Length: 278
Length: 182
Image 1: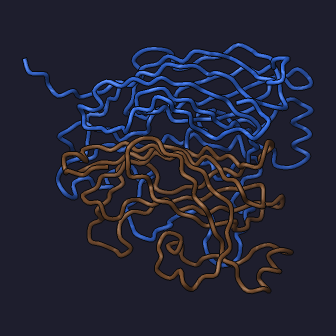
Image 2 (image 1 turned 60 degrees about the vertical axis):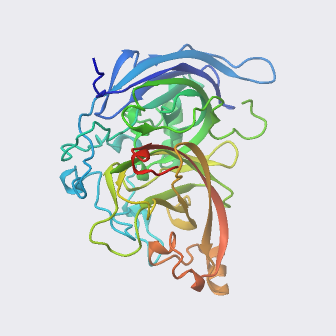
């Protein structure tokens, strides 16, 4: 019997949260979770996890190793696609939060004005960055008029990492947040992602939060996977985490996707500054 | 219609003299004039945004890790999307000063790419340069499209800023149906 055209594809990801470099902190553990849009659904494996607490090694590397396994499989679920007819995909039918009609030379509703005197930020930034961050659910392409072939509107899955450790008083405080997209091309990928924490607004708040053990943190770490709402945050980047992914996909090519050359070496991401172990 | 997915991150920036940096970014597609229907349609994703402000504790690279997830449908090859960037620095009083403008084309071959986008900023007269050194501020572009178009650039006298680092993955769909090799 003739094989029907597939309507979904699978993305299988396994790997590990390998290690971290945080020069100033020790005894850390990390939590990971996957963030994905409406078009994806995990079919197997674990979406979240908490690792063990690790201490720096005594040798010169001073490495923090977790070796924490990741194993998850995603399925694409969107039956909608992009019609072959010219002009069918109308941006106006999509949610207006995320999309705007293409206009040349359009800088649009940026937070700060482009011309004239330097912008005054005090009108824009709220006094306390973190608790006011809203987790806006990025509205996707709902009801794109239609499609003969299945496709994705995307919001590719991302892995969000949060690293925690004890402070001087023994309280558990956040040491960094970071996120990266799960690679969509099959092969082995090594990613080193920077980790950052939100900063206190004033010196007084900084001292109070150090003293009380309640540092600024995100109410939901998944905010780190989004772009919206980040323009009012001030952060400090203070470490790196290295992840390893092995990706296998099924039926992506049959659905017309070209993911590029298979990446067997796949070392990417920023390199930590000199002197830190990779 | 052929489709292009751009998935990646604006990783961060190096080489700027100031330390607390943020980046405003946007994607521009299509020709420079208003056309009745644009060849490129944005099907999903946010076309522009602004990153967080980062003050690096280790090294001198400011890290933003700002996600970019765009899905375009296109009828033609003209007007391949360009990412334009404005890097600003913020001081302890919350004032912002321009650190650089830059743009780079979204890569055209599928796979993962590391991009380094150099930046520049307008110089101004010697008085404006002196004022910028003491008080801050400095000239800025009135219209953002000079960042990615070459049209009126000959009027500008600029100096170079640092480099913005991006990692973008391209996923193409149905390009082989139309005989396009990428």
